[in-house]
Image (cartoon, rainbow, N blue to C red):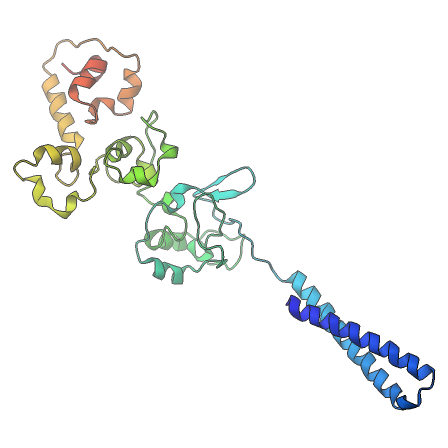
Length: 300
């Protein structure tokens, strides 16, 4: 656009210069320019035409809509950073249900150079992810949004609204739910704690607080009954091998029913801890729970 515009202005400038030169020669009655009036008139017409083309090109260049990376319409899974809305880490924490390439065809990026939603960035969400409109502002169409969440939640920046990520975390978690990283979600040292305290951070909302600490447990379920593997599966494969805390909790509560008195709590935080699941969380040993909150947890 601007190359054409520059060429038009350059041609117009040259034409105007030659026209002036020719007029001067005509005014001094140069015998070599007997046909000069016709040439000058033609140059002037061409000059006016190119000036008009240049002007129209300039107007179109400024009136043409410029694509901007700004989140509009559906602001779910975003946060305001003081100057603009940006995507939260939870917006793209999940995986697409169908292939990424298929999602790219179904939901093309509004600005190809910007790509798709990414944490702390402000790429536009593809309109088809939430509406049938072709421009923002646009009304949210729930059928369109549900289809996007069911098939391409990552491409559409809607992971935070899927069932696996849209639940409440405990009131007093053992770690900061907002700073949990993707590597922690995969770590055997953190997965069971996160599933209990911060399930929405890693997509554990549907797990009931019980996940495998080691992600490969389900690849070989024979380990659940393997001799010599019981200590391992009780710790690292609780979900796959049906060793979740709920069964341990029930047996502990039943055994404590015969108690007539309990050791006094040694911590003043037991009530809050109990609300957050301390009494039933097998991350802590029975001895630890008894030592700190025997009365609150009703442990003999």
